[in-house]
Image (cartoon, rainbow, N blue to C red):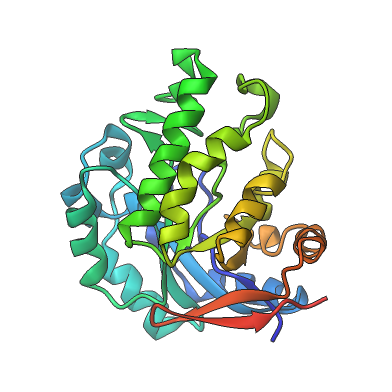
Length: 276
């Protein structure tokens, strides 16, 4: 087997867009062509849940209300009937809305579900709008983020935890707690260790102000010690981001003794050798 990329979006995040502009055979071919060139043999798409009207049954955040314009079932039908892609979704963990999210997810036949933490209560970790960092206390932000990440793992809703230390995304542009960050990682570890979730190793952070792979090595070491498997992804939003700087990710994983990565089908996980 070759490389994998499951955390992939068929449209950019940077500007408003509609499904009809990007859920097309021609656009999918752009992605599959790049994937073939870069040795990515298992390719899936995981659009943001907030893009779909059905997500408003889960949460009514203004950001979701503004973006929930597409039909979730039409997305599923397009991927299943008109593409060779595996079908996934990136679903936010919203504390207190677990049952509603479970209803949305369980009603559809995914190959995998990616779970992410973008919001802490109503504030966003990775957006200027609704910026959680206006609180000005990095210790509180990091603590709440990793506590929430542990809850997300423990919920059982997800097959993969996306960009697990997303809270670092801004790098020097936002304050970072002093000292050993493992004290925050440990807040998530009980939930992660008790779960069956895979940990995403994502090169997306290399494109962000932080300039690092997600997650940081000490955090990934903790996850590996807890027996969690690794899912390799790029969080691509355009074709050229597929497999972004995967050579560095593979080297990173091999240095930690990782020899296998996850593949998914019908929400069943299998392990495949990590290519050199």
